[in-house]
Image 1 (tube, rainbow, N blue to C red):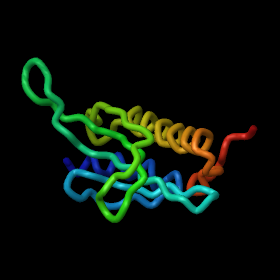
Image 2 (cartoon, one colour):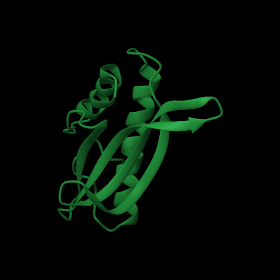
Image 3 (cartoon, rainbow, N blue to C red):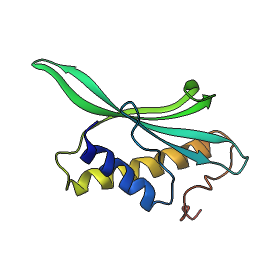
Length: 125
């Protein structure tokens, strides 16, 4: 994963009050804690996506329940995003921030875990 991509992934996560890991093996992970003391791991992975004219880089954003360090037990969400176009791609950071918040709130609403306590500014009901 290029350094500027890792920085553009980590920047909005840190600004949201989360604690993302450093890029390791093209993966950045971040724990999302819920009121019932469960943890869902947000993982952003850089992949090569096959296309008509060869492979192109892409990002996979996943929310998974992990067992141990690297084994996913349950996948709650998985989506593919385009990589940032450059080191100043502000629309990318906005899309990633919105996607992470939507993932966290959707998991909270659909899995009876309670609210995501990792994210400040929970939506009013």
